[in-house]
Image (cartoon, rainbow, N blue to C red; front, side, top):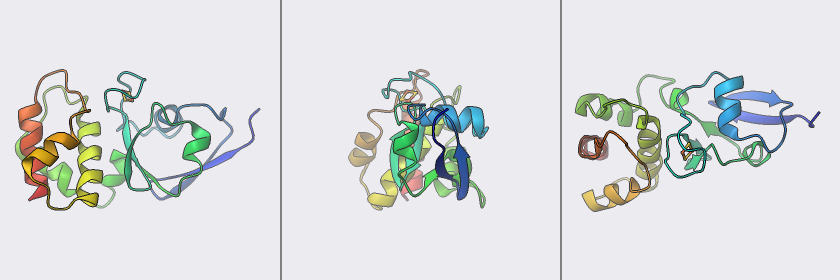
Length: 152
Ligand code: FES
């Protein structure tokens, strides 16, 4: 059995005995029942599994558990809404920026991290920030509208 590791997820401490190379996404979804982050490609390519690790957007399907345990704070979509919907989440509701909704976790988390680092982006910067988040339904126009709303 692997030596225990401790994660800080949404402000709570979580100890796990899982293998150190377990993807963070597996722990979040299977052990902590945090289903905001989605399994899409499992290869770090689509963005569906995005969480915030120490304030930066990170693809939890390719982050090992032992790497995640070295961080101070992991925040999932659920954590973002802990005290009511985050303004980015509110913008997505206002823009009705979803079709199937599977990609939205990644879109919201990516925009949250981006706006925290760059509070007054122009449209081009927002578009670039989302360029590696995939939406198979093709609702990028609405998603960008939500991103613009969130940016103010
Ligand atoms: Fe992690 Fe696609 S599921 S990037």
